Amino acid sequence: MNVKKLFKKQFVLLIATTFSGIIISDYTKATILENNYKEVIDHVWQIVYRDFLDSDGKFERSYWINVRKDFLAKKYSNSDEAYDAIRDMLSNLNDPYTRFLDPKEFNQMRIDTSGELTGVGIQIVKDKESDDLIIISPIEGTPAYEAGIKSRDKILSIDNVSTKGMNIEDAVKLIRGKQGTKVKLEILRNGNSFYKSLSRERIEIKSVTSKINQTKDGFLIGYVRIKQFNANASKEMRETLKELEVKNVSGYVLDLRSNPGGLLESSIDISRHFIDKGVIVSTLSKDGLKETKRGNGKALTKKPLIVLVNEGSASASEIVSGAIKDNNRGKLVGKKTFGKGLVQSMRTLVDGSGLTVTVAKYLTPNGTDINKFGIKPDIEVRMNSNLILPREVGTRKDKQYRTGEEELIKIIRTTNLVSRFEPDSVNLSEVFKKKNKDLVYSLY
Image (cartoon, one colour):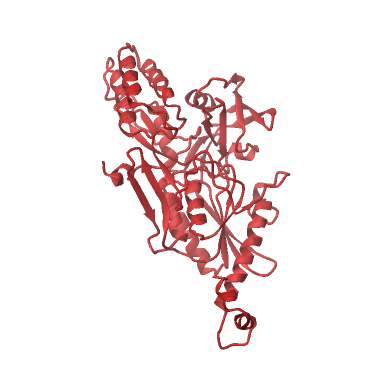
């Protein structure tokens, strides 16, 4: 199998309960016949048998062959029975990211590439060890974000229906609903439970936002926030960086906090905006096929860089963070990232339903597998103990940003000291040079 073909249309994906999809004109136009539900089951089985990467190393092909025999031996009178069987079959994989979606769910999931959301704006995953439904992060600008939902919150109930033993698909059905209606979530945080009533809304989200912050010393800092790595993120980032470069900023703070991920190619392209040369990421399939993505020599800026991360920075966010850190292109500030180092491929099945299947894991440039471990920042800083307003994020009232800005200024000053060094001049750098030549050069 050609690894380039394998990853050509694949992307890093985190579960989103609110994704609303590109509408297919008529769901009744299924290609499968009424009594041929086993075709969908077998299609799923074949994909898993051929492409599934088991991150735990417990997947046995002989066992999976027996699973096929068991499920195809049963009778299914309707699509719901077949779909339930598929979900039951996939539960044997013990992988929360390999999921089946019925036709409507699949089309709603595909909106991940378009940036339009319908729902409350939370991204969730089912912890296979605790069996809890865990919020990866709320999406900025959505009802969940405005209500103060946080990364790592656990959902105990949805509209008074307990989530104990509930799969993601059932949770999605309860959380979704008509625009303008409300859903009540029972949240567990730090041992305390409470309720949040959230409105379901349709929201268009811009992937990249930016502004210029001026420091007390007069430095212009380009603050750039990426909310999701969708299909438009790289283009938006390119336009943003070009605008900020024209305005002659001294350096950048790239905010990836609570960014749950998105497209693999988007994360690679955005990394290339900052990294001129060097490895960005490597992907490794179950067959050991490795593909390495590198900088293409077309970085848009070489100015000093700080990346803000937290527990909600996952997947594609971790690809960018790992590339920046391992290439010594900048420093990471904040809290350890989520720890999702797996790549999913979205597959369309014979009846218009879909499957997201784990097909590879990715490694940072240094060859580190961060799955379940996350990436530790260079400078660890907690967020404000008191909740700050949305408009205060990315300002000096934002503790993590403030620390990042202070570190960035140190780097800018060091860089300016080196760039201003003139061998024939009598200045501070010349004095340093006479005392210790290595001191000046060590600043690079």
